[in-house]
Each structure stands twice: as structure tokens, then as C-alpha cells.
Length: 115
Length: 114
Image 1 (cartoon, each protein chain N blue to C red):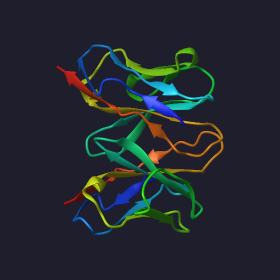
Image 2: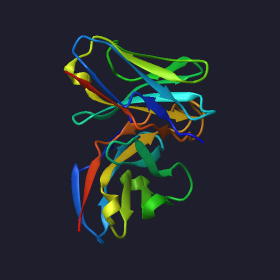
Image 3: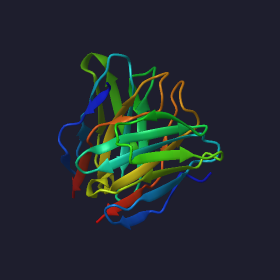
Image 4: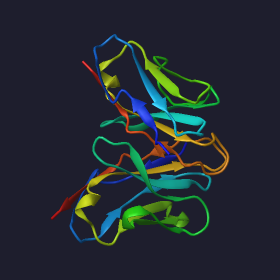
């Protein structure tokens, strides 16, 4: 079974631009979560989607948004990029959104560099 | 709010020596606890987890961890370090019956000295 895939793997943007990152979960998984990883702040939760609905949101500004499609694929968008948005963005998928333990499987991440 | 503390961002260990990475959590309810490993330019891989039951859990690559409720700890150990253990290790917490949101510690960068 294929793992979580994220595209693109690397991106370079300039300040003020916007960017869209894509995540395809493991087949059959319906929950997708996004995390931002930076050297200073570590791993921080961005948001989670299940059945095309945002279920949970972390403490990030409104410039960060996301969506999920009917096939469970998810995209996240960052508008008006700032230098501080440079990070590794990780996507994780799991079978369900709640209940008992749901193992999350992480993708390789998208490395975003903002110049 | 749940939180995780990992002390010592960089940990050096000699090949063949004990690997010990400390994790303490803050929680008002019994948590689910995880250790993840991250190799360069890769995502996170689950090493082991504690949800319920036996407090000593064994994971992949010879790692194990023990949940100690009285100490609010979930330290990761491996008896004998291998060069391939050089990576970054993260402790994480979430809660049963809740959502999938993970709260991570700052991580430990492990360097194995030959």
C-alpha cells in the first residue's frame, strides 16, 4: 500500500506570494492533518480535516488555510508569504478523526523556502 | 493544554552505549504517548506508542519506553547504540477519545560517535 505522498517536495517562493501544497493520504484514510516544522518552534499543529470538514485548527493566522476533497486528498494554502513561513510542512493521514487510538502516518514533507 | 518536555536538544552517544532520551508530559487526563524518529529529509516514523495496558512498550529498531504515571514520564531507551540511530527523535502526546492532534516536544538530535 502506498504511503502518504506530498507534492511538491521543495518550493522556493518570494515574500508576498502565495503557495499551495498537496497531500494524498494512504488509501482508505479519511483524516488528514498538517504540521509545520521549524528549527525555532519545532513541530506545530496547523489543522485537521475529515470528510471534507475542518475538525481542528491550531494557533496560526488566517493566511494559513486548507481544504479536503471528496477523495480525501488535502491541500493547504499560505497567502502573503512571510520569511517566517519557511519551514518543512508535514502531512499525516489516519483512518478516523477521533475515537480510540488512530495511528498517524506521516508523509516526507514539503520544504518551503521564502526569500 | 497538553505539553511535552524533552531536555537537551543534542545528545551524543558512543556506538554500543546506552541511548536514553527523556520525555515528560503535562496532562490532567491519562494521555496517549508516542516516540517518533525523523531521518534527514524525511517525514516522521513511529517508533513506539503507549495507549493502554502494559507500561513498558517495545518498538522498532530495538527501542523501548516505559510510561510512568507517577513521574509523568515516557523515557526512550536502547541498550546499544548503532550508527544508524543517528536521527532526530520526538516525543508526542494526544488524548483518548479526542481528535488526532499531536503535541510534540522540541526533539533530540542524536549523534552516534564511532
